Length: 293
Image (cartoon, rainbow, N blue to C red; front, side, top):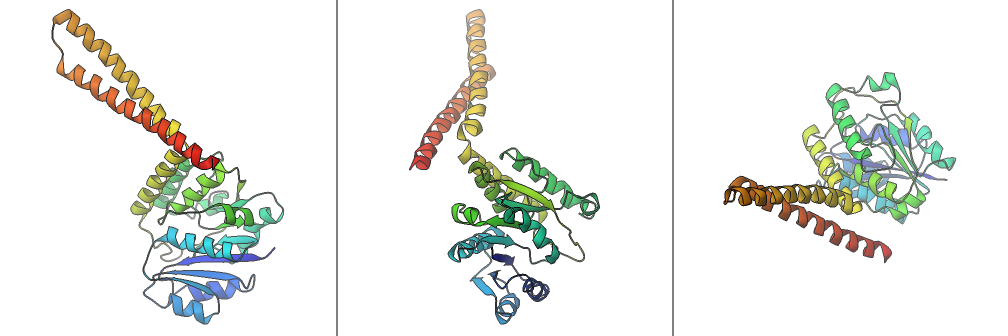
């Protein structure tokens, strides 16, 4: 099996050359998605003879991963490894990440920063908290129990490359791919990797990263599980509304007037609950019809 390595890169002129040269010892098929860089990232990658995809402007990490997926699909790649350009990951770990796919033990392999204690302790506290929070949210939407859903160091087999079509343009794409893959029963496993956080290895604002992932998770969860996502809250609100309707009627029967607060809660909860329930049924029907086709 031939390994294709895809590197999303935005203003990575300080790291991109050394990473490409090291990767060339493993594979000649290297894709660099230059996501609208304003530095020499594009020029360096082209001079080193790798496949370069250029975005005319900075579209986001997700857009870069999508372009890499499409190119790998066009190349009919056996295995695609996505590898960050910030110097965080170790080239030597690629073999460990692809090994479960080579052995047909997995369809997707995630290089986790949290499977070994000494590596886990190297992750800065604020990143660790954010990653764990997002991973817990992701685990609520998939069948697997992962430790590092946001790792950009991953390997995908040919079937995943051809069947998963990621669309999120932001950092939420990592979660999107996992949700879609889990729903299609692809086997997802994790392996330990080493990391380096020397210098400034992150180009992403942690707040916008977290918000992007949370919104993406909610969006794709609502599409994959509309009955749960909308139906459960709708049923709860409808029940609350019914309770307050009965309470309001009893109050009117006893005192001869409607209590404004009880009536407002009764009407509001009932209306919102019914809207959510109808949305759940309609979305479930539409999504089921689309999947059947």
